[in-house]
Image 1 (cartoon, one colour):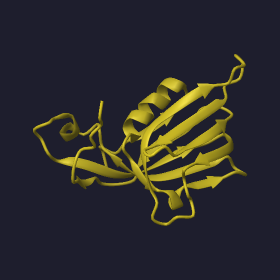
Image 2 (tube, helix red, strand yellow):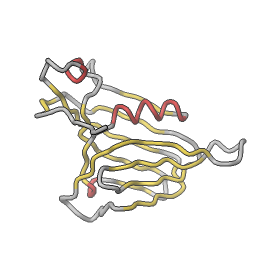
Image 3 (tube, helix red, strand yellow):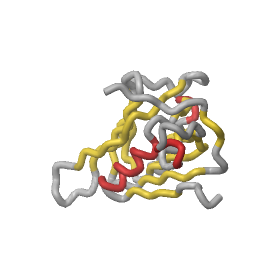
Length: 150
């Protein structure tokens, strides 16, 4: 579909763009897939389509969600907190993705942190930033727009 997103992040600025697009995405903890041998992490998400015109207008009430995959490569290790990947019913809501660079100037690696509502999260120790967001198909109507307190 022409309006499906396919984004790649190769630096901290790119990762901020990805973070904005996946904010308020929901996923099942049990669907998180990590392959430590290949250094790959896959998160199948239902993301709120913030880029859709309806999400930017208060008076237009056709909000959308899209099935997407958030994919990270070049992972040396993965740590989780407050995430039970064995639970078939545990739902996580993505708040943000941030990057903390390695203290060595010539090292492109560092840590990528995914923060979830409720205090859980994932911490990826990475060789470098290499992430992708890919929409998998058509959008469906979302019942409401996520609200954030100030």
